Length: 368
Figure 1 (cartoon, rainbow, N blue to C red):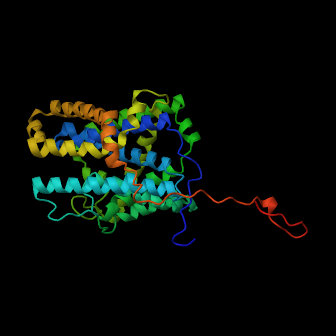
Figure 2 (figure 1 turned 45 degrees about the horizontal axis):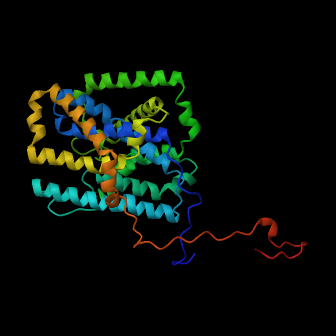
Figure 3 (figure 1 turned 180 degrees about the vertical axis):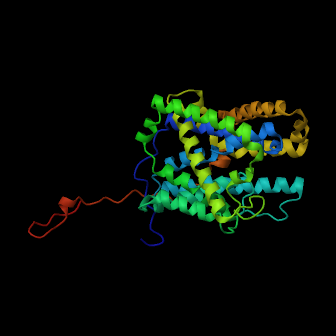
């Protein structure tokens, strides 16, 4: 293939949205927004327990679902165009905007660091890297084992925050697990016995986080620090053991949550189809409320009441940002068609059936 040959056209058109996956996206997006709304209140015990519980599995959950939906990535024309329009363009817009806003209020970063995501942009950068490496993970003989080894070893060395590489490598196993999920495995999670065990696991883990999280270092849950640096201060083996435990907890709670996700269509299905806009926009609301009104500093004296209030407001905000008017307004910005940038896709060439190929002892057949 020469440099100017067309990329392969998608082998099949985009499939119809699956209600179960959109339901899952809806519930995980609520966790994302709630978690981010509690970040500034983690100094309070009443907030730290909820924050620790959410952060122990909400991103593993999100990443596994994202990996599953990207399992057929081969780099065809449609997929490449979509990566640019729904990952690269939104990343540049959101990361640049957020850094300019924080620079205005806080004076940091001193210089724009577009390739070093500071907050929300990390997930878009991670999706880009995970997606373009998907064919590798589909081809390896032991992909999940390899991904776990990479995650554990990544915490031993200093890795620059270029395109969120520390988090990309740390959370890699959940993406690879998602790539190797299938419909049958999701159906098995709906067994009533598994659902009962899942509910118990989620409730027990929530209680444990409420009771014991005060002495835990929440930076472990960000998946980006080297084991030996502040504030983790862990040796190599201790660091790998703790990260291994986090991988296990994240996987167990992710599958527990997936087991309880409703299968049928509902209002959460409709809203779950628009989580993309909620993810990209909720950070702007949080930063504006924090920097402009110092909202979280004002809420801190109210203790558990402020935590409950934050959760309620976060749920309301998330639902509003998943409504159709928001999607209509921001779709041209966050999902541009980019017809001016890409060449027209060419139809796939007609293949000659194997039976029509000339072979010794058979008469010549002209290819169609």
